[in-house]
Image (tube, rainbow, N blue to C red; front, top):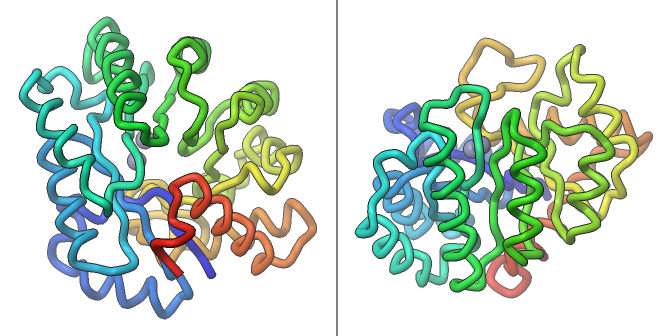
Length: 257
Ligand SMILES: [Zn+2]
Ligand SMILES: [Zn+2]
């Protein structure tokens, strides 16, 4: 009954053993994976993987790191890809002021453009925000979009409260298992269970006890267990509630059983 609401199965890190990774996820009880596009090429690949595996869904979009290379034609094609029934959200999109791989002005312009596109497509959005909390939140607010998730949530409880009040979900990554992640642990403690999703963001952000290795969907169980520990609940109940939230956000109620 586990769902990995944010994975990158399309990344090259999984090219040599994707089938084994999927099998380990199945054995660990992961019955659904959302694989998230980060540029045009990887969005295409995410969708082709989703077409290949019944329990995998895809999203399309251009990550802030990759926006410098996106042109009008890319957005036309992303829009066409988004029409596929296996595409359940637009993203990941947002701002990354930690690494600043693309210039900030470009990131802002492309984030605004993609929020508008997601609105046109009537898709929920997957938001990436690193060290850009205020700007990200204010752009989401003014976009008028009220359906989506702040993935790999890195703000404090005051920010989480604002996201939830806007109608957004907070997605908890394996980072919550790290000893030093006190702010995220507090967010998890305070946030109502009906606003939480679970994610790996694999191949990145490997949870304890696998740190140092490549992350993969099977490891989502460690995040569910940590959230259960923080909330004083059985991890199975956490997993179940987060799965219900994910299906609701991505409108998968009918599509996936
Ligand atoms: Zn991200
Ligand atoms: Zn990601």
